[in-house]
Amino acid sequence: MVNCSATELDNIFHALSDTTRRSILRDLAKRERTVGEIAKPYDVSLAAVSKHLKVLERADLISREKRGSFQIVRLNPATLRSAERWLAYYEKFWTRRLDALQDMLEGNEDE
Amino acid sequence: MVNCSATELDNIFHALSDTTRRSILRDLAKRERTVGEIAKPYDVSLAAVSKHLKVLERADLISREKRGSFQIVRLNPATLRSAERWLAYYEKFWTRRLDALQDMLEGNEDE
DNA sequence: GTAGCATTCAACCCAATGGTTAACTGTAGC
DNA sequence: GCTACAGTTAACCATTGGGTTGAATGCTAC
Image 1: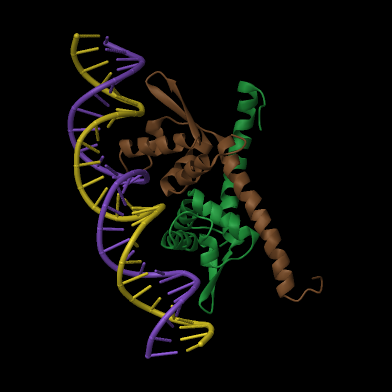
Image 2: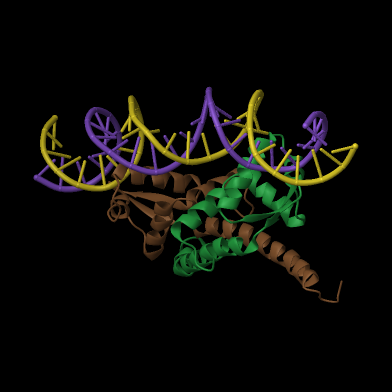
């Protein structure tokens, strides 16, 4: 999980591209929950939430542990770190490059 | 752009969820390019690339400047920073919360 | 075994994606 | 004007996405 393949990044960013799923991740940040607990605040069917969890799981953003007839769903922060690293790397790179450009355009003497 | 709405984050993460689009962003990190230059390395039609650029533009990840019959496409690092901040915030939050537990459960294998 | 709860699966609906080709809209240059 | 080039739009196609409802699974408790 240190270095993400393209497909893994596809899955991660796709999982993050839905408001409900990001909200679920926020909820899980507070504490682990069962599927039913996760679904409760949302105005969609349990089946819909189950699908969202599948997307999050495919992205490796959450993992589950069966406990009796329940499942405990919890976050997988390492995966978030992968995405964050991807963004941080490029953001830093781009900013650095554009800073130089901006300096040039604004007439800084150091060409 | 400092604080993103839910829809803006939807658009940003969706834009990032495609390998070709991330690759285009990488290309643009090296230098600004015209649409034609952007399209050249990819094995899809110009129309397909044009659509990808539209997705990136909707997410405010790139902007364009018309110059004659060309367009200069360039990155918009501020938007990347928004997404990065979102991830960094939650990643840090989750990691902090889970650190103790993780250390206990599996020792530290981070990276 | 049966009842009941937690969760998933199956089948469907419709909108959106990512791709194509072909037609269209500038703009530049003759 | 006409031609050529840069890029977008239109129309289409196949696949995926997110939602639904209802049946099926799996576990617990009686």
